[in-house]
Length: 39
Image (cartoon, rainbow, N blue to C red; front, side, top):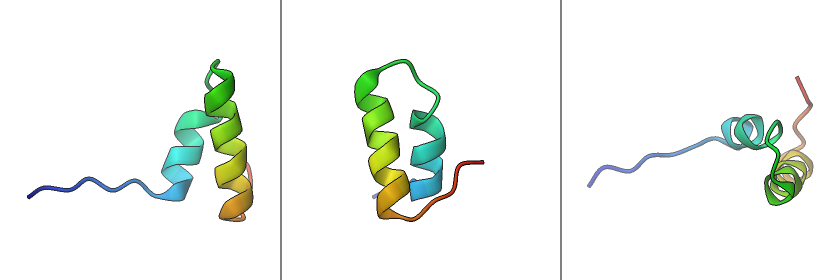
């Protein structure tokens, strides 16, 4: 079985610059939950 894993940073980077409101909300939740700083 092959499993792909994304880090919280990778998910945040993918979602933070999208147009969809839900993705922006997800990005903010990930940033807060994992104490990430915006680059």
